[in-house]
Image 1: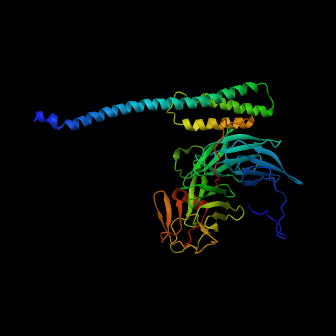
Image 2: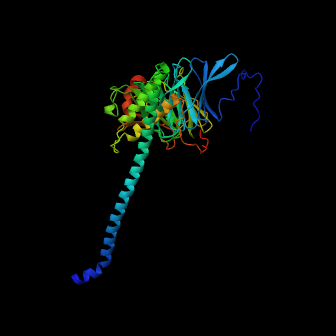
Image 3: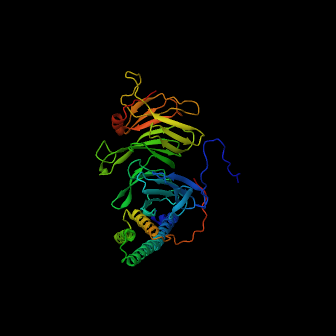
Amino acid sequence: ADLFDGIVMAEQRFHGEGYQEGFAEGSHAGMAEGRRYGALHGARIGSEIGSYLGFALTWRCLLQKCTDEKNSKRIRALDSLIGMVQKFPYNDPTYDKLQEDLEKIRGKFKQVCSMLNIQSDFRIETERSSLTF
Amino acid sequence: PCAPCVPCPGAGWACRAVLADGHQRTVRRVAWSPCGHYLASASFDGTTCVWKRHEHGFEVVATLEGHENEVKSVAWAPSGTLLATCSRDKSVWVWEDDEEQEFECVSVLSAHSQDVKHVVWHPSQELLASASYDDTVRLYREDEDDWVCCATLEGHTSTVWAVAWERSGQRLVSCSDDRTLRVWQRSEPGEAMSLSPGAGSEPSWQCVCTLSGYHGRSIYDVAWCHLTGAVATACGDDAVRVFEEVAPAAPGCPEQPQQHFGGFSPVFPIFSPFPTLHCSASVRSTSVEAEPSLRNSPSVSFSRHMSRMARAVLPVSFRE
């Protein structure tokens, strides 16, 4: 009976082995892809936030000497943006408020741009939106 | 292209000004400032213009830029120094007027996840409400130099087109693509049974009344009269409806439910027939529903835990 087991169960065995091999390979490939995606996405966010920080620090420097009311409001907003960026947890991708804080930083950046009369949108707007009421 | 509008003689209205150079695309909304000297116009070109009224016309005193695409709504705060705009870019912007009519952006709020259709200020406080394609209404207030979203009103199952405040500011009504009106009530922290006990120090809002089955299509606008308390709606089924809160019924009236609730009933339905509600109230775990006897008839439902507040605040009973 054992003699024939090897032959009779051969197909099933190869099937199983093939599945295991495929699964292992797939997991490995998935890990690699996930890592690449994470790195890319992380870099994108880092680059975005980094640009906000550089922008804010530069302007903070430029406005340092200005003491009038209008500029003091701008300085307050810049300080707020700098604070938000510095508080952002770079080392914890599982931080539950990540998207929320990111949106707050983007919102603060847009506000600062508005106060400084700078265009915050650095992309070239090519799409023409359709009318929706 | 349509023919230029010819003013009707003897109509009682005269066209004083045509402000054609302010915007490059559709002007979606206009709003007068509380003092009446300024007019704000929100446009699909992404900008909001603030016009100052002069003897001989209007002049642009500020152009508020920053939204990435169409601005859908603009509203002045009761104080007259704050302006709110909202856009398809999913954000709500709050602007402040310094004395020189220079508007400065005070906050960019990206709380909604979709197109924001409407913004409206509380009648007396600096509290802002916004309605969105994401089916929610959100409330915002200032908190230590920055604006935050302090409440999210969920319940509608489709786009919320507009919101209106009651005169007291304790309630607001929202109208939606889902053909219902919802009335939301404010409750102070610690007061009444809150659905989320850990709410802390923020007032919470609960939906105390849902009016469904009255409108045949999407409800695009709602207005709550500050003089009479009547609520009017604009609907895609070509009708205008007016709702009023029902007065208390006589005691001993048959089929009167055990508890008394605030109820809204249609007063002047313009389209036929007047919907009749044959109701019996039953208490379920968290809501009390008045079940209509006919399947497709209108229904009104209330939140149970708010019923006690409703009883104290609105001593009315459900009229058959």
